[in-house]
Amino acid sequence: MKLEVRVPQLSDSVASGTLLPWRKQVGEAVARDESLVDLETDKVILEIPAPASGILVELRQPEGAVVKADEVVAVIETGENVAPPVAAEKPVQPAAAATPMPTAAAPPKPGVPPPAATAASPVAPGESRREPMSRLRSRVAERLVAAQHTAAMLTTFNEVNMQPVNELRQRFKAEFEIRHGVKLGYMSFFVRAVCQALQQFPVVNAAIDGNDIVWQADADIGIAISSPRGLVVPILRRAQTLSSAEIEAAIADFARRAREAKLTLEDLSGGTFSITNGGVFGSLLSTPILNPPQSAILGMHTIQERPVAENGQVVIRPMMYLALTYDHRLIDGRDAVQFLVAVKAALEAPDALLGET
Image (cartoon, rainbow, N blue to C red; front, side, top):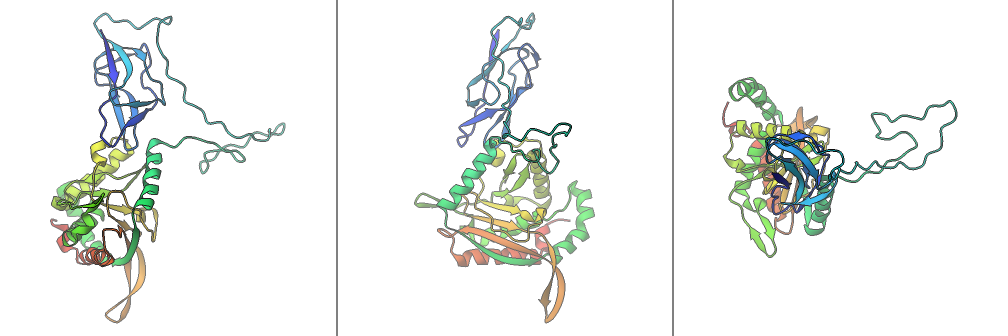
């Protein structure tokens, strides 16, 4: 019996996807639920599994094809006495991946080997290479440009003394890891500080929808993560209810699955506020861009020892610049500034943010 392999159902915000290289070829045996091919959408990579065990007898769509939900991409022959098809049959072979064509280069001199590409450059000296954007990077580019055209973005800045958080982490990090099986990082402090501030300034957690303001009861916090495919923003659902250990465990899981391209559409859908940490790459100051339809995003930056004044004395403290970009159509400057001050105050008196030891 022949069974069709179909594209799984996609979310309302994802209309189609691009087939990546097939993992199985015509004539090969497949096992039920074995991944046959990955589908790259503008948010995640999804696996298309075999619906049953059998022989792959037809590929309806080649690598690189753009397909929609429920579209047939392959056919499997099932049954006890199924044999692979002979070479003379029907099958559509996947198209070979297009090889980007470099621009013309001067021919090498006799006896002189051509220059080789280095780890720092994907092409050899004197040459260039063209390749299509991934769907994810193309979608990110589209959304970032759209955000600048549709929102009245403004950024306010402050700085926070990270010494109290550093001291608390040093005091409890060993016990925390033993008790919870996860490291005590910085992100749980920031997430909980943001949740507290959102309770004080709920307009920062709201969004504009046409002529309406949508108010949110929960703080669904997007955590920007750099993956091999580009930037992804998985969502911490109801972050205001999570313990520090739950936050740290969830973020570690997001990072692992982002590296392995295992994030789901559900992981990336929704969100009422985002946090991005350019400090892990050494950024001292930046102006983050909104993640529509959210109305605000917090930018963290690198921690740098700087001289500051305390009680009339100049002391050296580990300082971090904070940036809050917000949609001025909805959020007034007063609320934005006071929100960021509330985050700063919580981080500089962080005992209440830890919640457990």
